[in-house]
Image 1 (cartoon, helix red, strand yellow):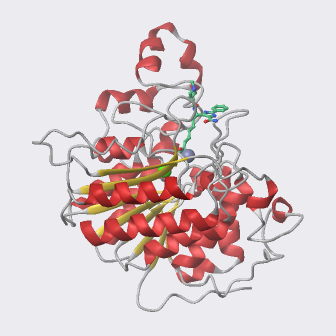
Image 2: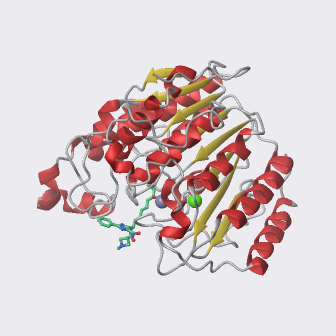
Length: 390
Ligand code: V1P
Ligand code: CA
Ligand code: ZN
């Protein structure tokens, strides 16, 4: 039985509730909460649970979710049942709140939402109380939810709720989003404040890739009286970005943002659909490159709230999040890259049984991001940062 030692000098907390895992979005829906089971099994097989404080996440209360969400939206979320979607008296609300194929109404929906949101709120509070330095909730990260609208598999925006907690203790919070999709819900929630700097890296194609927002020019409403102007940073990318260019871009952009903005805490959304071979994604990243972004973020030594997000090839989602857990507890150089014999569901990791299969070689996508394009992005971010002071 493997046992990873606690890291020296700081504390890592793990916030999860296994009751999240059995929820089903429905046949052929890409979002699979079961990937959390697989992640936890890997983390435990490596013995990493010994290196963290483990907390059973509470369900967020209605009032906690009302910190961001409108009450009539929460009321709907609380009372709607799977059969109701076709009932004429519910039709208006189903449309108004954007339920349907992307955001289906499934059994236990409200309990699913309040549990993943509770994990992120708990994690943020542990950071605020100085009872944790790095707090992890892999079931959170649902960045598309709006105050009165479900969107892109997201119903309750746990990231906004967690960030609001951090803002009670920190004048400035930086949000970083490496999901392949634009973090539109978080961006919009903090559109009018200079107390949150949002930074999203994503595939951008206005007409052909969800959600179609996050152009480089969209930096926050430019009204001179709006303190939030310039406080949204978007890094729009094309298909097939590779490890080397993504890591270099991430370090340049985040390094510059940290230097200028000097936040008191960081929220990192680790959507794993930016990996190669993702069912919905179109980037070409390997597990190590995705993890390198987490490792770089950790080097700043700030209170860090780490959440999950997208990720639609469960075996690779769990590889990435297990590897990233190992980085956060400083065990990435200790664990065996061959997946332990003892892990449950080990067949999912065959035939290689490696934590680091060559994802970029398995479905080769041309890198449509030229060096000149990427250099232009970095330059534009530097220009934007001139408007921002820490
Ligand atoms: O493209 C769309 C909408 C549906 N069309 C009318 C436009 N939706 C996407 C949603 C992706 C959500 C990503 C969430 C996250 O950022 C955070 C958790 O990762 C979509 C896609 C797609 N290929 O982009 N929905 C579906 N696929 C889908 C497929 C089968 C069943 C249900 C939804
Ligand atoms: Ca993103
Ligand atoms: Zn995504």
